[in-house]
Amino acid sequence: MNQIRERLRRYVQAMRYLLPGLVLAVVCEATFAVSLYTLVAGLLVIGLLIIPWVARWNRHLANLDRRRAGGLLGVDIPERQVRADKSWLDRAKRTLTDPMTYREGGWLLVRAVVGQVCGLVAIALTASVLFCLTLPLWWTFRQGRPFQVDAVTISSFTDAVIWSLPLAVINAAVALAAIPWAADIDARLTRRVLNTPARRLLQERVVELSDTRAAALDAHGAELRRIERDLHDGAQARLVSVAMRLGMAERTLADDPAKAAELLMDARAGAEDALSELRDIVRGMYPPILADRGLRGAVAALAARCAVPVSVSVDENTGRQPAAVEAAAYFVTAEALTNISKHSGATRAVVRVRKDGEVLMVEVTDDGHGGADESLGSGLDGIRRRAAALDGTMQLWSPLGGPTVLRLELPCGADRSQEE
Image 1 (cartoon, helix red, strand yellow):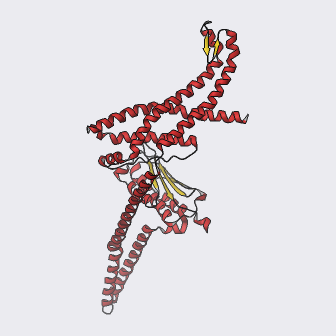
Image 2: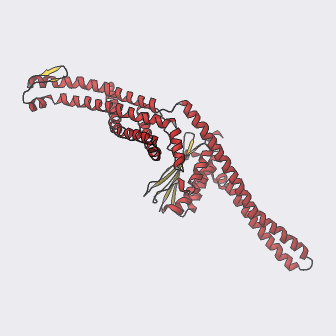
Image 3: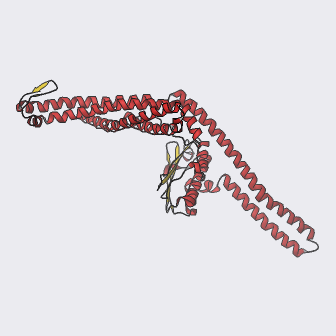
């Protein structure tokens, strides 16, 4: 009985894989025709304008099939990132020089053929079981004309009744064995075609790390320039003013004690202002609230200061994380909430922080009008660079009409609170 249940479960799982695969195969067939036309037109320069868009659509379809095949096989087939290059020339160059563009183009043809064959076979085998169960009805519809089912000739109503159940059982056994097998072959072929070669992954990793290192150095240099500018224009200027007032007070102390006292009071006020600015600069480097209250308290404080009502959810298992990770999560949340207040038109927002394995996930959602575009600025590019500097990722979903979801994933290693 357990074996039958397992076969039925695998049959249902296979049908849920193959039937959408049949629809996807039809879409891929049309897309392959468009891609082939675009490639030929590209040789005549006409198609160069739309090649990046066609390749982008192909990648979305391929990523969909990676998720489907990985779910059936119980393995992770890494998806290919759909990069948002700022200029058409960058998109075209990246598209035409990426070997996976052509690999995914070939996958369209494989999916169109294999997906339709496997899907139609699954439908035919399932329909054969239903056909055998209704043999008496088919005999009636044919008005007594003999017909053949598999290797059996049905020449009477009695034959139809007698052979109905045995033939249905035989076809069901074939379907229960063949359909999961077909789905497994389909998924394994998809994995083989769409799996990125290890050498290519290594090359991309080297390029990614080089870009990340360059971005981190640029961000570090910009941060140093900002600190230097803030010190020069703020605290340093105030301290110079304090020194001048103290000097004037020293010179006037003997002749005009009242004037000297006034200058000393001004100098004291200037010193307090300089101290306040120095605290602000230190807070910009690493917020003290993170050291005092942890990420949970720091995010709650950001939410309390936001102009839009914000609800905060921080899982209990988050614990304390490395300082760089907590700082990145804090500043990203601050930037996201600032964007929501200024640009989204939202009435409420939600911040969720949780730890999944060795990855810290921060998700900020708002019910605004959506349409956020990284290429237009609004700090989104800075958020991505801050995440990339820690080997993390940022994902943004912002359809027109909303909602907008920004998700940050930062590798954080072992939990410090558990280690201690």
